[in-house]
Length: 503
Ligand SMILES: NC(=O)c1ccc[n+]([C@@H]2O[C@H](COP(=O)([O-])OP(=O)(O)OC[C@H]3O[C@@H](n4cnc5c(N)ncnc54)[C@H](O)[C@@H]3O)[C@@H](O)[C@H]2O)c1
Ligand SMILES: [Zn+2]
Image (tube, rainbow, N blue to C red; front, side, top):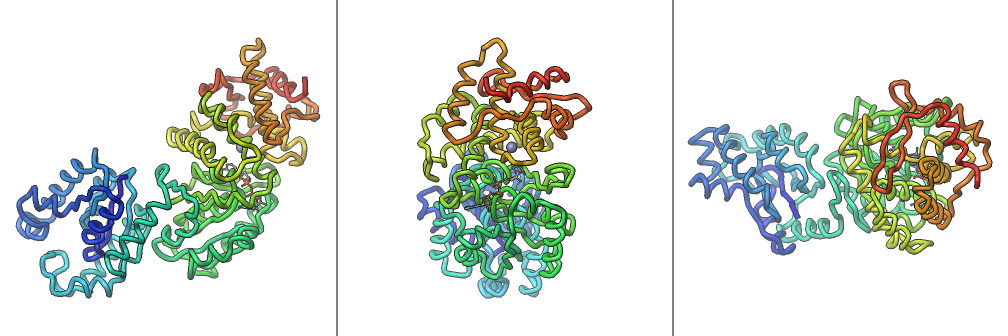
């Protein structure tokens, strides 16, 4: 594990760090100690004798060396993150912010004059440093701990957090029971938009994890993914006097994370966002990749923004209460992700028990999430690879529109996946694959054909908003794990549409 403790001087990074490392059974490095060893005198003396810039240069050199291959716990210096180059070195690290109150810091530090930056009126100096560093800590920290208690108690708390909440990618956390740690993801004020069914079922636990955070119940069906809902959220944010530092928690399925995410993307030109996906689909798809937005009467997802959550915290235990049809819908996207990943991913799905418990689903969900994370990382703005995520969606979106959204998105995508595979395999090359995918989807309770006439799909297919530069493009699969883009003529689209009919 790569974990770094950060915080103001006196926060307890070194003392807590030592106990925490022992508790976790991992090595411990204290950056200030390393600097002292290498430079031959303590950070305070170095700053006095060489000046702050020279000290920061030494510190950066050591962090550069230490951060690379080191695997363990690291206590940062109080101002290590003032240097943006250090923040870059720590990308991929879990940054834990120890944040006692200023009163506690003053008590701990009074009488200690080894810190040049704190000389003079201690309270005033600390306040000033806190005001300057807080935005940096708030932006970079994964989790915040009050750190008021004895070092051993703080260490135990952090250890429990690190053991229960796993890091699966930048800003993406995973853990059964991670909902109990939600309060740690907002460095200051916050407000939570919570899907109404989640509030009914998990409300007590959520309010316990987010004490003092106002919770807004959100009536979360697709019909509510509108600008009117967003306006209501704006009003709520204004009533609660949200400021630029207020974190928005989006707790619910894809509809909730899309709408609350749009609030976070736009209110006061952008607020920090924490996604707490409660459906399988939101966990592997909607809360990854930073797309947020709402529908218009003219079409789905037409208004939106890119706004990546600070943290996405997946708790698979939420899935236990999901209705079967909602679970099945997510499986369509998970099959799609497996097709993009490769053969082994498909095999894992074939071997998974069905009906599946959250435990059965976890490994395949993590794979699907990894596929989406990798694709989004390679192409955050959907200029190239990200388009692959639309596999099966040209027909899928058209079917949703042509049936007036009688088919769910997952059902439409299931039919769309089979259609694109059949279309791409006129010579039977992929026949075996088509059969496998059909069997999987049927097993998950998803449809694979439709009675809608292909003619009715043409217009919605031609108007697919996902096309760029005027041409129509399809995502095809050479074989599992090997998607590619191909230009499509009207005749191609007709051929594709015809594949939705059963053989
Ligand atoms: N932004 C993106 O990148 C992205 C990607 C994929 C999908 N989406 C969007 O996501 C939406 C679909 O997501 P969804 O399938 O999560 O739909 P959803 O949010 O409508 O949730 C489905 C249903 O499950 C309920 N629910 C949520 N969590 C529950 C739980 N733990 N237990 C019991 N019931 C629960 C909800 O109240 C709702 O009735 C669509 O609007 C789609 O456009 C967005
Ligand atoms: Zn989809």
